[in-house]
Length: 482
Ligand SMILES: *Cc1c(COP(=O)(O)O)cnc(C)c1O
Picture 1 (cartoon, rainbow, N blue to C red):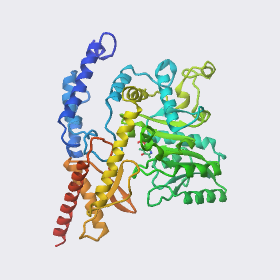
Picture 2 (cartoon, rainbow, N blue to C red):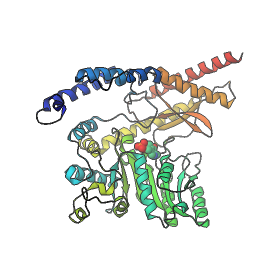
Picture 3 (cartoon, rainbow, N blue to C red):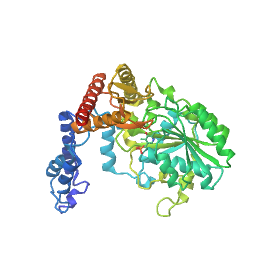
Picture 4 (tube, rainbow, N blue to C red):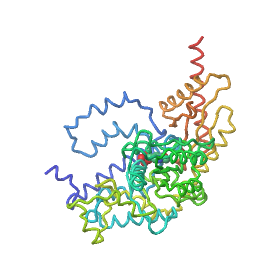
């Protein structure tokens, strides 16, 4: 009896309402009391608390389970809504999307076939069409929601491989810039291409793909009797937010008959922008596009899609199973999204974007993304004027890469160590969270600004904190030396 009372149905609607509300109340209370993005908890402190939980001894009571959850998760989670979380491509999420999340997980539609997702399939298709219109694709475009940018890139490259002029996998080449995403290399491996399949094209000082170098590599590829399978242009690199020159790259792809994939996992926010949409002009010439709504549309993970200019290319992901999506369902015009997807059972993530657009509109999202791009511009001015810091490149989106450069220290390895230390110390303090990366072999720090609530004062304060930690490290390092 007791177990059945946990099943969601007509007799348990009250329990459902009470339990979920209780969970939501805990998060709401957290939002009200979180003063720092992180507590600074260590793995060693947290692991035993989680290990101690006896998974074979249930507590039976939502309140007790949530109390325990406070201890093993909620207290020490990293909170992206906090204005001093400045690290990775995690956005604060919008409330309409959370309403969608609550509905979609309870109804639990599965987007593989129409007979598991009536309505949901059509809503997803409308959103794919909506996105394609924003991209500027014509009426033959299509696409499907995915689990994330990595999966979108994998699927796009699968289509490109199947459309390539050769099926000798060892001869196929993919061109991506040195600032491109590592999922391109992973995809090449999964797709059975050779170890040299991904040709890295250098970027200029602006961290955008050098098209002269791309042209050179494409020519060399053909000269060597190899096949240029795809060019991956990045519209918003993960590290710098830089946007590869899409029109010039599209020109080259046309000339060489090469599939153009635009990885706009980050830059897709510009599709809703009121002022900066032109920065991704040329995206409409792509054969396929990756968008991550969970990065720059303020959606909860997961929410992502792969879009294609020519719907017919999606057939490369189509397989039929008699029990699920038999061939005859195509003739009967039954819309089975599994025909287009790498996944089978699949969440109705599209509902979150639907709720968002129906509540705030695309302009609402675009305005938020424009705000973080403006913030990055102001952060860039702060950094450029601050003698304590070296900053790599003016922002194209909302990312800043910089490093602390003490006036008195000339040893580059020591400067590296000071920056590494500052990042770790800041994380351990929980006062702010920033990311790190390497540029030209040296360690840098990174702000990914996706929270419109973050202010210039927050940025200035975090820069002071970083400088303080770095100085402390260098002071102690001097002591050690003497
Ligand atoms: C984040 C990112 C990806 C991967 O997306 P996931 O949703 O994390 O799988 C791919 N490309 C770029 C440029 C990204 O920034």
